[in-house]
Length: 275
Image (cartoon, rainbow, N blue to C red; front, side, top):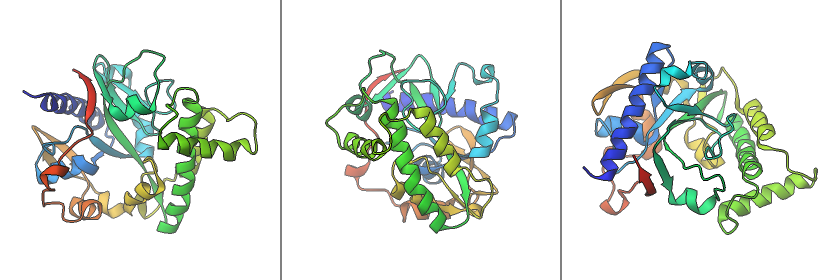
């Protein structure tokens, strides 16, 4: 068995744990992005894919956070409120301690003086309600700025200094330093992020968790496209999926049932894997 398949099976076991917990506590989730495409087109992983993407309403995630730790069978649910060095996103992830999964991106952009290695993870993208595309765009620009603020303040002396992402951070920091002498810390940034994006009612949904306002807008979708949910086969389990997954995938990928050229069938290219 090759390493990619071993990684997929490790992530599949983590997804089963998430599915079990969510069904036990009646917390809706849904597969999204490449995992949704895999469920529809392959009834499992896209053969060259190496991660799992889950979507969830922010209000439902708040309930998920209250699930007792022992329910997770050794997995760690970590978000931006947690004091965890290797968690570098504003959205939550489910990690598997005792494993290592470090991408070239992580090693290039971040310095790690702690020695703590990044484990295998599942992404959990949180969705908020919004009333219009105009409102979504306005919030997306601000959310992107707050995301950069969070990363810059958390990794101030630990980000490598020769990459384009860091230059964006420095640009954002200069704007802030026009008003203050010291960039406020990540906790303040994430509080402002939550205050900006959270909205529990509206006809549309959007995930502000992605890295740029453009990508955030790609997730903008009618609420009725997601709910009510349906069940789809994924490998040897059944997962929750958007009710109108066809419309969702067409918006994301266009002609989603046609396989891409072989030269584009690549994943995220992990650099270090220990399972």
